[in-house]
Image 1 (tube, one colour):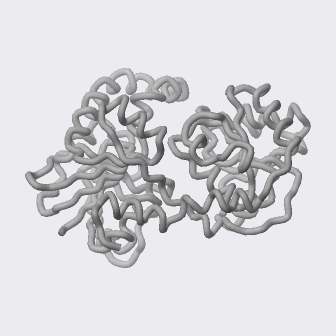
Image 2 (image 1 turned 90 degrees about the vertical axis):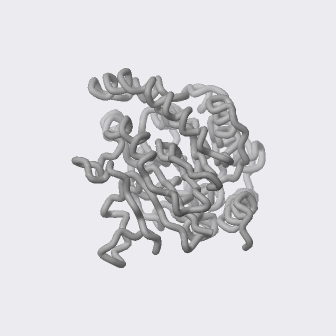
Image 3 (image 1 turned 30 degrees about the horizontal axis):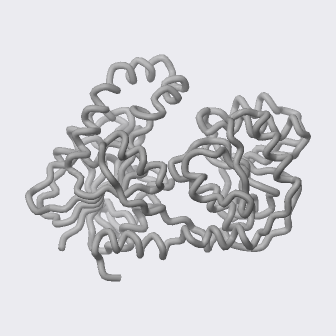
Length: 365
């Protein structure tokens, strides 16, 4: 059985790409198709484009100006580019989707399984958040193209035989937007790498991409208001403003983008991770728990599926500074077990993901 893996674009290594890497490991003879394959992601094993030993084929998006560096600029062309991919030789197609890649032309008898990280947030649920954060040109483009992209996204769902959602939260989105049921398989997390025992320090950690909708600003403000030390890990458009706002404050530290070993240490030594945004699944809280660190999270999205209230963390119910302050006070009034956190994180490891996806795909392990 010939197998193809589809991914929207390969430009950096984030959660979606880690899922693709796990699928590629499960299916060692599969080929990969994507809209753009950026040079930093290539493994350098050959002059031909390969990724983790798999041959990669790009759509025409990659040949357009800046197509490999900024493929998102060509979103309106991606539905057409997906339909032009020649997948006729493959019996099984698995799309890794949160951008437009699943809208393929499927031949009779071909099976298409879509692992959906989320329906495109910037045209559906989070349109207002992305619109508010966009510049003048971005807002004009969103007004011009969103209706078309929504129609194409609904059309592309018709090519899918089986939807797999990365969380119950995303499964509900799939049901609401596409009118389809889905199987929930949580993504793989490097829990073994982050697991360990660390001496605790008296700081709260805020980690992840620093963009407005993830609400690092209110978490940081809450820590400062309560006189608590905060360490911020991550880069993004919001970072410069936060650094300027808290310049000279000795209780706030910005580490930017750090290496895996430094990140593991930051997780493990933190008193708790504060996670104030809404994520489709949210790998960061699982990594923190694997390092033995409890989580104070906003009670929406994937965190509801990864954090056990009263055991590995607790939830606050409003995205406000006051609500986070109240949660910190409650957190500090309790005792927390690092081993309980590590044990809870084990259920999100690679072996579990591979076993569940093998069952979905009817593969023998």
